[in-house]
Amino acid sequence: MHTPGSTEGPLRSEFANDPDMAELVREFVAELGPRADQILRLHQASDLAELRRMAHQLKGSAGGYGFAPIGVAASKVEDLLIASASAGKQSVEQLRLEVEALVGLCRRAMDS
Image (cartoon, rainbow, N blue to C red; front, top):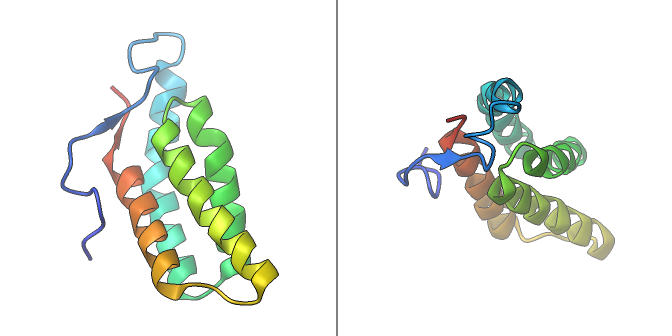
């Protein structure tokens, strides 16, 4: 499956050159692939509550590890799910696009 942004260059942490953060950033990046896979599975299974929880967690952690674009993308997924829950409907296509954008950014993340 093609994910938007997947053909773009690597996404690097703001802390890529910070020796104090290097190990933490590596650990965070190592977890992004499995997280991206889980986000896709949750979306495909329509487990929107768990998808929202994962997006919220990623939104909070991504910025702390220097990956603001991932945090922004996760926030868009979370906001869309919150809005759709309160309105009682969701834009299936918009959610798919936002999830794919988030997954694409996660896959581009590099630690150095």
